[in-house]
Image (tube, rainbow, N blue to C red):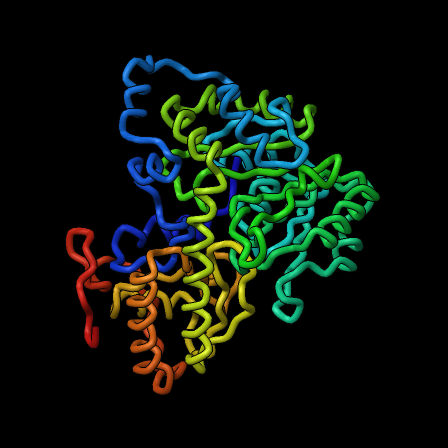
Length: 404
């Protein structure tokens, strides 16, 4: 099976262990096990429950306790509507493989996580992209969606909250998307890995699985729950989808790790506390980021309403990759170039680090913009930086460049 290289993952794999300040990070500042135990009202004595745990395969579909905790995260899902996977990335892969066949019509709303168009394309599906527009606040044009979702469309795929823009599709619009899908007979796959980080109100995005009889929601422990190291996600969907996913899953999963299952259950049973921490971080940091962008004349954006990332437009005579590699070379600060997600002219900034990391990183970027914004011309562009030597790295470590 041939598939397009995964732009964002290639970028992250190449540079995230070599930067000094990772403002490309999309997970809310990760929890330690000690912090998780404290946050959930447990203590280190609870670790003793792991000592007699025999390291065999766990419950194949996920433990009953875990699936109960996941189901409680929704308004109308039961444990029978849930199956546990290796991260949200595994959940998305399984859904696409379970539902999409060669020749099926698939509509993917972009920009998005690349899985949602590259996987169906690799299967041989007839993939149609609906491009979000900045002028629309990065929300989908429903007229354009209706025109693409012809009768017989197999699947409409989207992320909500959106990655990378941070746009949030409200309930009323989700219901309209469901109606468009219903008319076409299509499933709707909604990647909701950032769910729980809304900037206003209680912070919880309504789920597509709860709104539409053919709605499928995927999520996991990485972004909003700050536990990417568990590598645990899930699919919440109608029973017939779960059955098809299980067939696919038997070939690449068997079960998730028992320790992952244990700690994910603990976090989900105390989701209110864990997500309150995440919202405190993302809401405070977005205010810092907004103030900074307001003061930078070369940058503009549509302010995110949820999630952990912002898509920021560059007014500079250089490509997004050139900008990001030069920024890394001089300052050690890492952004994600828009070119890695089909959005040239933009960069994705993650704002879920500790506030002091965000402040330090943004201050360094301001210095970089002040040095380069007025004097870089297209004739002066550097070639894209690709080697560790040209980035002043030695043994995998960032080292200051000129002007740092």
